[in-house]
Image (cartoon, rainbow over all chains, first blue to last red):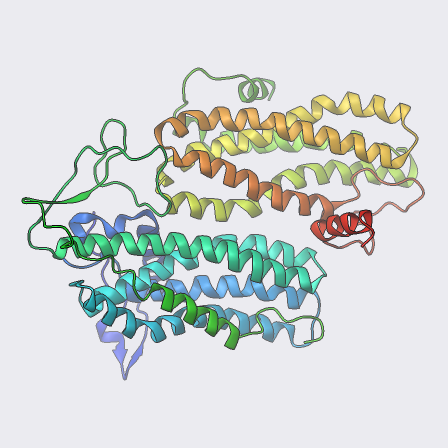
Length: 279
Length: 223
């Protein structure tokens, strides 16, 4: 089941650096299935990771990131249309372009440093694996944002106050949803990075010990590989001989703050997101 | 329909099978129940300023608006909730969750229709429009709070299996409340002020409930 979802592009269709879809509709469905797999944690199951790669198609995920980002951008930009701002339709289109651009440009800017930091702290992930992981994390964020898109659109349609919409988008969605989406997405990212780092350790044996978690699952947790009768079992890397203190590989969290700061900076550069009546 | 209403309101001893609960036919029946029950309350709600002549349309509008308030709010809040459920690894339970959420809507509508006689008698003894608003807000609040009995009843077995469902249930209440308050503000007037023309949407009153609330608080403190 967890066979890797193959590339959705036909190689023969890649001519002159331009990619043409062979079956757009079927490809689109596969892309969304990919995102669904990532959201459900299916794409990051342990047996797939033990093969050293994520069972997702990065190209497909990038396609969905663009679509979901554009959907959220349209919801965001609908304020300008509803309130009949001059050039409002163009603004909505601009927002639809800018949201995916915000995420993909952030990826482009921060990817080299994240990879170097990961290598420095002892992660054995390949360049491609780190890229796939970041794209998967980003797909999670965009899926959450697009999920909240209906609420943003509803408020954009019914509210005249520009200040409120800015507050809703910037404060509520930047602080709440972006934070929730970012937190969940990054928690997922860290968890997978940890798993991959553990797999990279030659002495590690991955077994499911019957360890109980606290009452609730941590946010961002993915479905368990195996569940005990209580359904509360976690995977843990176990060494055959306990490693000496301090020999644990550090969490590859370096680079995440860099991504956040860069995204905030890019968000500022790319504004306006939903221009006011005077814009 | 009567049987379905009883089924929604009465506690069930065992967790029903998701496929039995989440069938298209049952969903359709529950939607019809929400439309009928909510619509009936809406009609009674719109009788404050009379029900003859132009005022008849207020009954029609209110009869449409109450099911709209419940249904459209539900549809707007659902996508984000679905993504959160998927992300937190409980997508396999979503059929049961959805059935529970729709039953909660139906229970709220049934509670409202059970309050319809109270509203009608209340209108007979109330001559003051703001007091009619207070009465309806109070009854809506009671119906919403009591409707949670059905929500938590359907969530209890899910929470017993996966603790994260508790946080998700609260998240749903937050999302639904946030959208629902604005929806109620957008769809007003539900009652129809005496002396004002009957309209589906109040003219020039397209606005934001939270800003109005902030203005009320600000003026209360004289800022």
